Length: 489
Image (cartoon, rainbow, N blue to C red; front, side):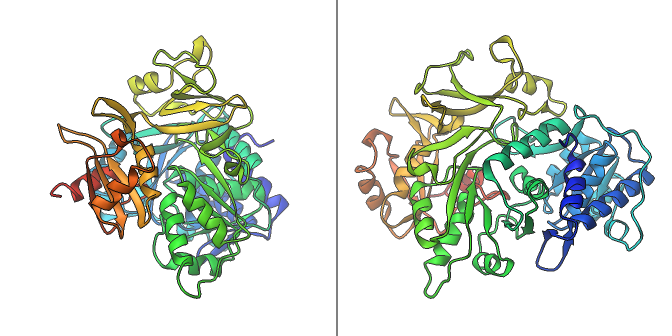
């Protein structure tokens, strides 16, 4: 049983040495080549003074170099942090100042100007020479493995979630147990590797023997369908924006459905009509809806097409974990009562890097026992343990004296004919809630038709039509940017 992250690639190199592990449109590596590259990478990092517990920041595009570096860092007991290739300016300065890396891999003028040691690694990691063993104290399963910055509502500035080897390996194995990727699968990953959902596709590929094909981060352009065909993808790791793009491409004249057998979704709730329309457009497709946060990797996973029998559910907790709804004091609520969703189990990460107050608030001890995660999400659990997501705590707002869920309003708007996408901007600074939609309907028509979908008191007083919704680098709706877009509307 693997206990350290690099055990995953070492085991894969023994089981499937010549099978392709990771590919892009221009390059690929087998499991054995990737394991060898990580050994060379470990020696390369050690030669540059990186030691156990040091931080290594990786900045750059998705490529076969990234997994080699992650496994290399794991081997010497250092801690990796992957940043989006477009991270620059104040966000980059914030991360480098907080993590104090021993090395940044991915030379840029900006990093050099900040006086942080940096280097490129490709030639050294993928040279023809035999891999070199590393003489160093190896990590323990309880040692930190990685820092993943979350852009959620944790604090005013991005906070880094700390994951240990044990927590990461448990999460990988538990997720694989539910998703069951196959050795003959090709997993198409259009998500940035700085996004834990994208990163963990690499590790799931190592556990299952599947090939992970790295696409364009948060791919929402016309090339998506073509790339699915050209890569031979059988699994798509998706978010709603990617799924929406895929459906629109499939509705074009003479569009040919890809050979997908499975689509997974997390990061944001998938609209039910979008799921149904994708199944209709791709007859071979099964869908597994998931719910998770960076702080626990994944909380729940639905059985394949389980949403058909339990509409609105995001699945069962991972094996060996539990999810329950709690009141404001943290007390467990009975079945079907709405409260804050709380996660307990080995998948709950270690806390936030150098943020003790935030860690104490989000990772309290549940019922006086072991640390848990207060997710900041509202939901409920049925008698069979299936979890239902209602909305984020900060998505619940008061309008006209009533509590309203932005998630529920958005879902109702998407059910209006002619509406493609929808987002709610909650009330702020005395301004009422605003509904923003993409589609062919007029604002008055959208609001009028919504009366058949939800109670009138939940419908925002104003609606604005835009050409598209701004997205974050992870493919989620960027509400801050959206507020700026419609500020003059």
